[in-house]
Image (cartoon, rainbow, N blue to C red; front, side, top):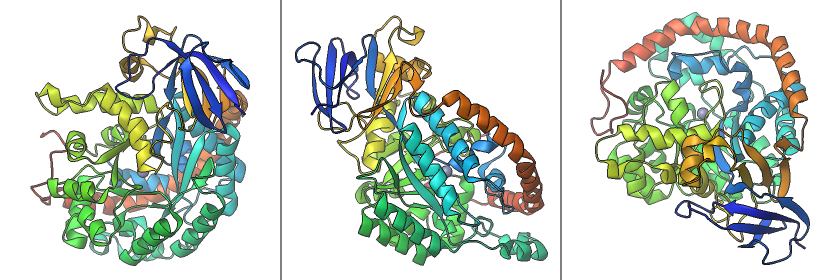
Length: 501
Ligand SMILES: [Zn+2]
């Protein structure tokens, strides 16, 4: 039985089909698109959602953020990754209640939906101590609001502060000893927890599901990475991992492995389909060839990379080599928003700085493809997500064409990428269920949630401030390491990721 019919919308199926002219009706059965027909050709069935005057587009896929950073929004600027990241993963735990976790998760989910996102990937830090109630609260938030969510608990068996070069030389011995004494849930226990979660909530069958999120090669032993890979293969789970986000990490790779972390992962047989390398900025042509050969995806997070000064990924080189590219926002500690339309816009804008051969510039269609089809492929949802086509899951965003961004209407895709803000969403469906109608989220009381989240933050802010002062104790050593690595050469084959001074 047809569950829902969307009537009289202008359908943006996928890039290349970006000049739709005639209104269509979309018939949805069991969460999937059954048929897309000229309006009026077949009688609407089930729940009828009139989307006259709307553009019906696939929901965007935000391939990675960190919901544990939402209470840190707006706190940092003018700091590179290595000097910033401990603030949002302090070794002095911030005592969040499950309700506060629920609220912070909703902040991100609301912003995601309001910027046209229907699938969100959450790399959720649970260290130092895993609390199953915290994980339950995050999953429940995603269930209530109705977004498709894939949650990976951050996995690492080397503490973040030890995943840098020169730690033994630059950290005062007593500080290092006190950091080493922090009790943390063993990585193997967190992985076992994720496995049991994924057995009950697998992405192929659950709208809110578990995936695997090993943090980064330098934060994991080789043995642990092999175990994670085996788990992914055994359970057919997507994997996300941060690789070569910064120049310092390219230096780290040489010092730790004598080769790039891409080559290191290749040697561990870690690379393959449904495996996303987050950021992947500092790469050589050989690294890019390896990724193309193995079928791994790279994930572009342009706004995080710009704000943390991490560099600019060689996106055109990846696309030319046939590497699949997805898009992510990253967490609200690094870039203070989960706005995916802004991420797509940045992707279509910033790579035009690459050179004068304008025929090779990234355009709106390239960026849209990465935010939809690229994200779907990277998660193993090719032909299922990221396009409006019969057989695909009905994860759809309906934008009002009466807004200024679409007036006058020449090219809906370009005007959505360069001009829309997300404020003009009329309706959103996920798995064919209406989760926004008349511009209002149906699963939650958005206004009440945001008021409560603001109050929760007021309670937590003193704890966040205290944790930050403890992080400050590590900063002199961190700054010395940062400077030492800055002064070291990197592989001359690495493609330019920064403007020269
Ligand atoms: Zn990240």
